[in-house]
Length: 103
Image (cartoon, rainbow, N blue to C red; front, side, top):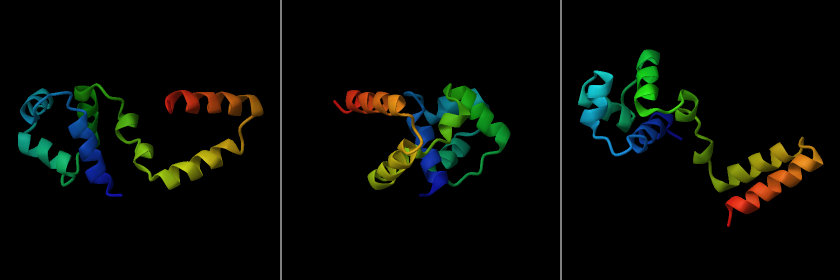
């Protein structure tokens, strides 16, 4: 997985209908820089990531959580791994949640 590109795609999806110009203005940066972040060719500083997170109203942790980008095979393996240490009652609750979201 190309993390920079995946991150850039997440920024694009996070624009909530904003234009690059609107985001750039809010962050006081150039539209070229916003475009570069979206295309995964820029290396934003930590300060820039904080501004980006605040501008998009997204927790920075969310911006870097790429767990959903895994393949179905990877996700099944991860789910199986998590389930090994879970108490029986918690496992039952997890199954109910999975059933609810898969309907």
